[in-house]
Length: 125
Image (cartoon, rainbow, N blue to C red):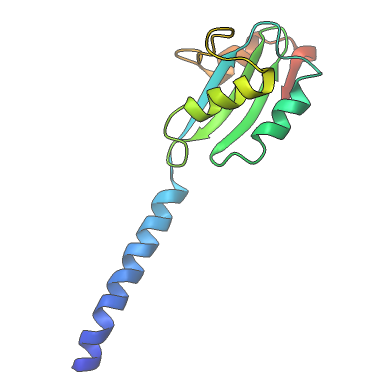
C-alpha cells in the first residue's frame, strides 16, 4: 500500500507533463503580415531570412515584392505579441517607429493576398 501511495505523485506528474506537451503541439498558429513600402526586395529577403531564422515561434512563409509584403506564421503560445517581430524589422532597416511605421495588415488572409501577388514577385518558404 505504501508503494502505491508513493507512486501516485509520479503518475500524476506524468499525466500533467503529457497533457502539457500535447497542448503545445496543438498551439494556435496565426498568419501575420507586414506591408513595408519599397523595402521587400531580392536584396532584403536574405537579410530578413537570416534575422528571423532563430526567432522561436516565428517563421517567414512568403514575400511578395509587388505588394511589399512579408508574411509570417506565428505560434502564439511562444510569441504572444508582435513587439519582438516589429523590433527585428526595425533592426534590419535601422529605423524606429518615427521613421518607419510598422503595423501588421489587419484582417489578413494569406490565400487572398498571395493570390493578388504576381507569380514572378512571390517567394514562398
